[in-house]
Amino acid sequence: MKSFIEYIVSIFKGVWTLLVGMKVTGKYVFTPWKHVTHKYPENRETLVMFERFRGEVIMPHDANNEHKCTGCGICELNCPNGSIEIISKSVVTPDGKKKRMIDQHIYHLGMCTLCNLCVKACPTGAIVMGQKFEHAVWDRSELTKVLNQPGSKISEGIKE
Ligand code: SF4
Ligand code: SF4
Image (cartoon, rainbow, N blue to C red; front, side, top):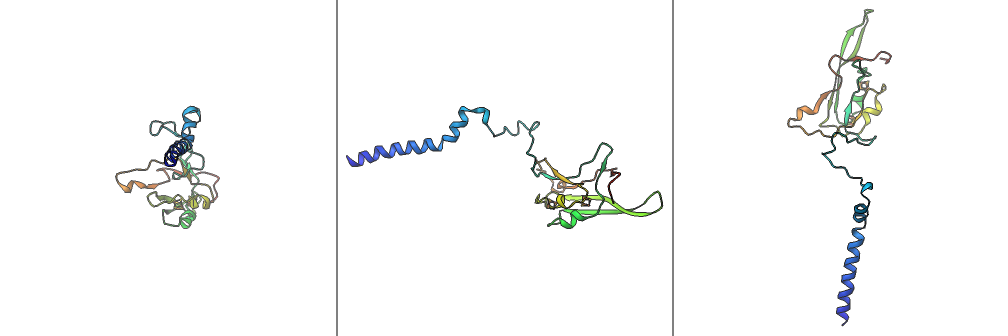
């Protein structure tokens, strides 16, 4: 008789632990407006990542194709794993002076740990973290990018 009672008790315990385990699931079944999960990739067009998300390093350009990068190389120096290469060039200004400026800001996304150190170190705010997170490619060379766009130049007012 004792073992039969223990058997019944164990059944009730099992049902109880199952209900406790399903509590959160059950709550969301009856309150669908509180769902926090997204239907990805169906929502790809409308999906907005949270503000602090780090998807990749990007260099914003304005409507005049101008950026804020002086080519100083501080981001390159601060990157712990060599994901950034700054190639600068020498140009002659209208007043005949020579000055260095950015030629190519090369970014190796495939090596980047998204640590954000380069963004924090940039004195002009020329680079930021982008929201893109789908980076799968067939050829890994596509993960090496030039962040300054072709034909772009530095914004007036940025101290070089
Ligand atoms: S986020 Fe970090 S690892 Fe990536 S390029 Fe910047 S400093 Fe380097
Ligand atoms: S992105 Fe910023 S830190 Fe890097 S070279 Fe340009 S101005 Fe300098």
